[in-house]
Image 1 (cartoon, rainbow, N blue to C red):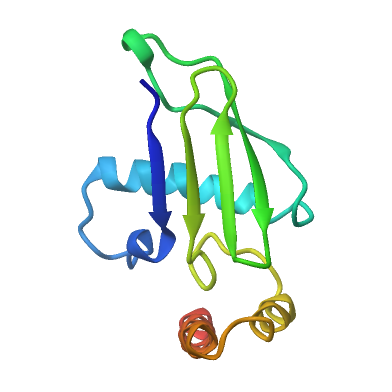
Image 2: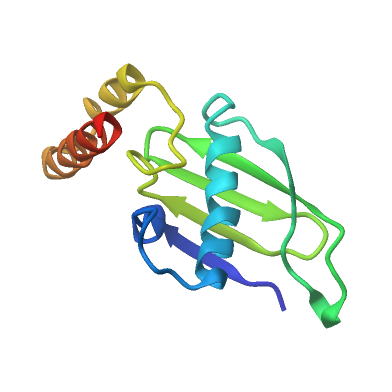
Length: 134
């Protein structure tokens, strides 16, 4: 049975010198690569990420490739594997190590958010700016 992953990338954005278990780094890298590839495509357009599915149904590696859609209006990425049905939603990637989007795009996205959510995103962006200058 396929899994449904609900992922907030800020939970995986560890410092490089932190002692993190290898399997956590592996799954963080997997979700992070989905984020990085998804941000390269226009909002609302489903695309092939080129990322091999990680599932192993019956202990046999899935042959599928992850497809994803970026929804900028709600700051969410939906992804799935056509072969095994593994799927998920990724949020809160902005300002993490996998966010390769340009800073002005982040600011433009924030203006369309409700005020409480906007404040959280502005704080997240400021932390990202501070971290990227160090």
